[in-house]
Image (cartoon, rainbow over all chains, first blue to last red; front, side, top):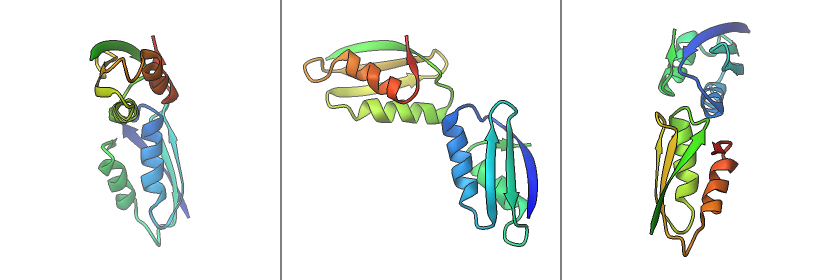
Length: 68
Length: 68
């Protein structure tokens, strides 16, 4: 299990939190997702044998946010 | 048919637009809803014989926004 903190631009409200936590959280291999609006950070705990970082970043990007 | 422009606090992104336009737009008697994020305004066209202003304001409030 790995844990990474991504810097994400454009998250502004509770709906953004739901959109990101919902979509990333549904990926097989992702154990937990936590969005922090104040810091603009998304913390993801995942199993790198099942899912890779680029898949996670792509999911966030697909929701319309920029991952730094 | 009446048309009113409400000042609403806390609308910040496309999800907020969808939440407000979706919920208010579903009220019987509401003909159109348009959210302007830049001005923080919600323009509603409605038939006052079918729906009253307090119902519209309540719907917006229910979504977690403050109507001035």
